[in-house]
Amino acid sequence: MAATAERTTIATTGLTKRYDDIVALDEVSLEIADDAIGLLGANGAGKSTLMRALLGLVEPDAGTARLLGIDAVARALELRRRIGYMPEHECLPSWMTARDLVVHLGELRGLPRRIAVLRTSEVLFQVGLEEERLRLIGTFSTGMRQRVKLAQALVHSPELVVLDEPTNGLDPQGREEMLELVRRLSRDLGIRVLFSSHVLEDVERTCDAVVVLRDGRVAAQGRISELRGREAGSARLSAVGDLVALRAALSTRGVHVEDGEEGWLAVRGDPALLPDAVRDACADAGVSLRALLPGDRTLEDAVIGAIA
Amino acid sequence: MSARLEDTRYARYDGVRRPPWFAVISLARWSAFGALGARKSWRAKFLPITLTLIAALPAFAVLAIRAIVGQRFANRFPELIPYRQYLTEIGLDITIFAAILCPELLCPDRRDNVLSLYLSTAVGRFTYVVGKFLAALVPLLSLTLLPVLLLFVGNTFFADSATGYLADHWHDSLRIIASGLLLASYVSLVGLAVASFTSRRAFALGGYAALMLIPTFVGGSLVGDAGLDRHLQLIMLGRLPIAAARSLYGGEQNPEFALAGWWWWSASAVVMAIAAGCLWWRYRRADA
Image 1 (tube, rainbow over the protein chains, first blue to last red):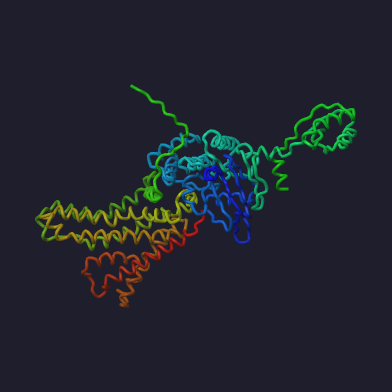
Image 2: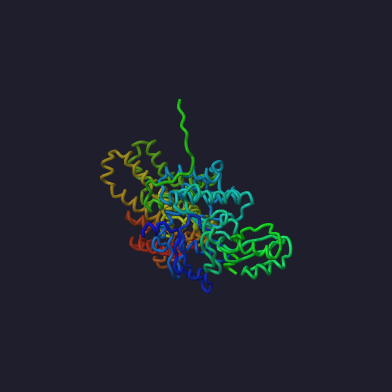
């Protein structure tokens, strides 16, 4: 039981947080064990509030929140020693060097000074700032500041790192590099990741599972591969000939048909029978089947479907 | 000649971790270094170093004179600056030092949002305030305690009999420590309380200077010039801890204005309690 709780990355039940009349989180219940979790939603959907509630930085009005099996309210300080947090907003002291700041924050999370110095070198190397470690943060670009924020979140060897909009303010190249870094955390370095973004593509590239928030409520959650695959039984086909007859033939076989892009037809039906139904319908209508492809929907389709 | 290859990949760390109180020490050390100008230009270091040297100057001067004139005038100048007088002489120096130090400890954290970064680590609001208090207290002790202790050690060294001097004056060492701790704690708490209300260092510096100096001048005028009730001296915020420290030695020089020592100690305690309350109130719900 304990091992299961430890394995669970996020577990919330009925988590609710209000700011006066605004309901930031509305009975959010989650249980996710994946290593890289994306938190997706428009600005104001409740992503940051959920993250802060999971970190024990805001006290919920109702419900419970556990991260790595640790109660985020009752054991907030212990929890924050075990995880790393990269805030969205600007929060770095301009008068410190990158090295000093990361050493300092490593010490604050319990690392002995000598270890903090050694690990600071490692993480600054990992985020690509080893050459700039002795420069004052006040002289850094936005991208370099984001890397410092990531380095301080990693220095104490956290089991999980919480990244709040890490690509904000980055140019295209900086964004690419940051996403690659984030992907490496869970894939290569064995650190679990909770990644918040309002950019779908960022989450799709870096995470295994996703939680979609809308107006403080969970609109969708699950593994990204499953969310995409929930439309098994859909396909796209391209044919030459009498398409009106083909549509009629497909309909008589219980296949739903819609116009797709660039002359393609989108078809949906019983997953087990769909390929045979399309073949037979083409034969009956006397059309030539040029292509029949799986109708994978994108994560975008799934998310839009969930929040629509 | 041998070489060693270092693997610089990220590795997990499963070794010893310091207990939570270590965070207080780390916060205090880094904050104090930053406020005193570490990693900054010489201009940032100039004032703290200068003010520290000024505080120690009387002690160095007295000891230098004793070293130069030897024992010839030793009986005529047994104490060029009595211990009870030392903090009075450098009171303004201490006030200026605190006025510079305390805003530097808190204001940049608010201005740069660093407080939210700290609170997202294992540092709680109480830990943060205690760390900042220590970051103010320890440097201030180098002005309120070290110079007087240095004078005490020097006087012991230059006395005809060091053991005899220690036997006669051991209680002075306790008074020196109590005085230094009281004054440093007082100006630290008041300075931090004022600085906690703003993210602008200039406002904090001006506010602290005004709070310490204006009531002191007003109280002095009301009692000394207008001849009003001597208890009005208790509004002299800049003088409270120094007068309390002097009361430890007894023998107030102006009996007509003298108040019993417990008045000064009580008033100092009330001001420190109010300052601590302000800090608690300002950081009780500081946004992380």
